[in-house]
Length: 52
Image (cartoon, rainbow, N blue to C red; front, side):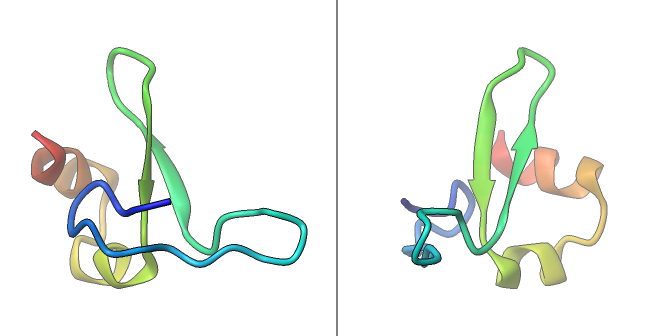
């Protein structure tokens, strides 16, 4: 899976869980976001602004 902001590949655990997070936009779509982008854009509003 790739990060929606930087398009870098996000690793998964051995159970298939994402090492990052999902951010839900106003339409209800889930966007995967990596740890580096989470550190760069601290709040959910900043992350959603980068997605558009």
